[in-house]
Image 1 (cartoon, rainbow over the protein chains, first blue to last red):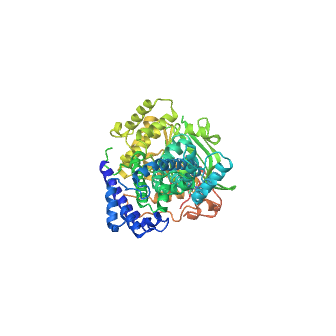
Image 2 (cartoon, each protein chain N blue to C red; image 1 turned 135 degrees about the vertical axis):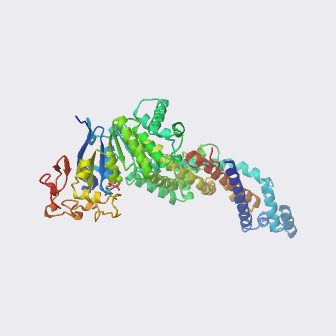
Length: 311
Length: 327
Ligand SMILES: Nc1ncnc2c1ncn2[C@@H]1O[C@H](COP(=O)(O)OP(=O)(O)OP(=O)(O)O)[C@@H](O)[C@H]1O
Ligand SMILES: [Mg+2]
């Protein structure tokens, strides 16, 4: 168990290293921060050189990368070009909002997708299944931004039930969570349905039925309990794309999270903030996957997390 | 005086495709007596499992109970709703399946799976149910039963799992046990042990067993009476001695001829030529006629079950009782 966690942490370091390379060089393809920052007026050559030196952009690229990497080892993402403050403070300031949104999105998708998927499977071939599948298809095919705007139009503008933007209380979380959760719930419902159908063909379901227990005990206790493993794996794997979706949803709902922070930083060529934000999100992602992997042994007694065997 | 514990009357089970009914089990009747083991044999696809699943009300989706009735004591299954079925399953009739490797739920402990059965039928505390589960594990001869109670199915061998299945099935002391190919998936030595166990428990608990198999050796070993099914119908019903010594139906003869005979030097297996017809295109006369070595004009018409010296045979050759036609 401990050995497994250590292996996974090592793996995490590799992933973060690869991402640091990618983000460091790709952000530098988007344009020069100095020209953005000095866009007002006609800056002198000296002023440009001075600013570059201040930001450390005068050094060769590989030197800049190593400075960045060195900071990373100490969890130091550097200072923002724009505000001069530490990037880690900016991120921590926004992290809560993004996590709240991600958790909200996952909750919404679970609350919708699991009943829909189970009912679709149990009522296979009936109109319940048909609606379930249409729902999945809609969830999958509606773009995030479209759904977000529709929800704002209906519930914020017309009905005035919920706020369309801002971050003052739990009611602000509802529309963004639904927007984010709907997409995932479409795919998740489909997965729950197919895993349930597979599980319900197993012999142990016949055994359960032959005991004279209720239909719902068979479906939930025996079938869904076994369909849980692929479901949890899937939610874990989708966490990355969920964070990606969060970036868009944060834009639509003016949600003060890391997604917006990154997008604003990209527009301003604030390299350290972009780098820090992306690395932070990827660490969260890898961490979530680790937690999911560790939870397997709780869900399925046959899996012992590749560890010593004696839990 | 023999006591009937189960009576199947003209049971017809099949697919109802928009009013077009295709029978998979075509109007079979038989009885089960207290304490006996009734064998059901026949080639793959002849409807053995469908028959046994009807007894539990567990027909797969798409397959319906079309006609007939099943009765145990005062209960008529035909009139059953979901609630009635639940009271019968496990309590009066229990079932064990062919695949011990997959018939236990992988995510629950053995103890939990036995207790579930007990708790769903009897008003006992969890501790009492657990004690009973332990007792059952001892009864079916599981070594270190205390530990096994808290183990998961993957930690047990196939033979041990089938013992656990038997423990579950018998935990509420059912009157009838249905075993659908209970040993087919097991090694020969394990097979013998499981059959031995079933025999022992049957005597101990005075239950009746319906044993489905395509292994006539198992039938000879275990059964008192045998039903031979072909294409959804009973073609022969006989005491087990009569089935082997005075085989009547040409189909049964074919099945026996395809048994490997160890005493015989030649390792020749004569199997019946042709295949079982599919339910949707059954021959209109005798269903076995297209494969029968004794087919004649009369077979264009479906024969009834003739009573012949305590046996029943669905074949025109026995129209005039035991005056067996020379073949
Ligand atoms: N779910 C189903 N829907 C429709 N037809 C089915 C279904 N399951 C089985 N059948 C048909 O019912 C017939 C009898 O099947 P059954 O399983 O009772 O055979 P069996 O005698 O138990 O064979 P085996 O020895 O292979 O277990 C077969 O022709 C099969 O095609
Ligand atoms: Mg079968």
